[in-house]
Amino acid sequence: MSVLVGKKAPSFKAGAITKGGVVTSDFSLDQFVGKQHVVFFFYPKDFTFVCPTELHAFQEKLAEFEARNCAVVACSTDTEESHWGWLQMEKNAGGIKGITYPIVADVSKTISDAYGVLAGEYTYDEEGNLTATGPMIAYRGLFLIDKNGVVMHQVVNNFPLGRSVDEALRMVDALQFFEENGEVCPANWTKGSEGMKADHEGVATYLANH
Image (cartoon, rainbow, N blue to C red; front, side, top):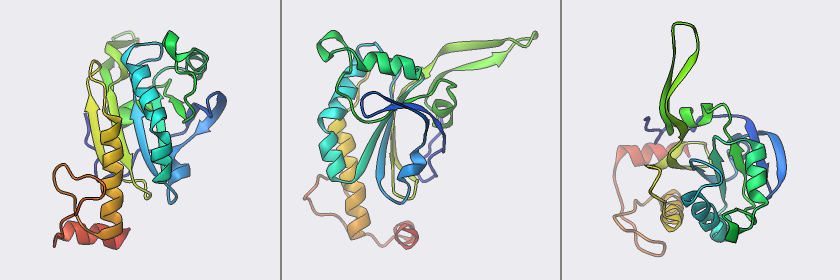
């Protein structure tokens, strides 16, 4: 599993469902570069149990992310058709109807692999047949990407462990506070708290390049 913090977020083009039901064939995070921060999160599978709780939790806080000029984008290895079908199901039936942010279809599994969250490995046998070990679906990875397309924060959970959307929002606040003030954020920092001045070469270099 790779650590992408401090590196450019892997670029991709893939199918996606946007606006709660619009099929898009060439969705890319590149559209946000220079314009918005992005919270890009992976979940294992459609039509499961923990996953819809996370997707709905992000939807419930979507206005708060948008108020911070931060896009929210989800991704799994399911198809666009699977995403679309799940979006038709009511929440009380285990569906995700009402989700409006984009859901990427990583059918080839190359996006999950590039972000280091693909569970399982694959090899080819002597006859050239692909043999997979593991489920070949995405762990619960989350990546906070700045306006320059650089990953500033990442967290990866195993399948049973749902994430905190409030923590993702806190990290957006911390990043934007640092960008606006040049001060770093101590442990348990929350919006409205004081930062800390830091005379550090890495901070100076970051500010000079952004």
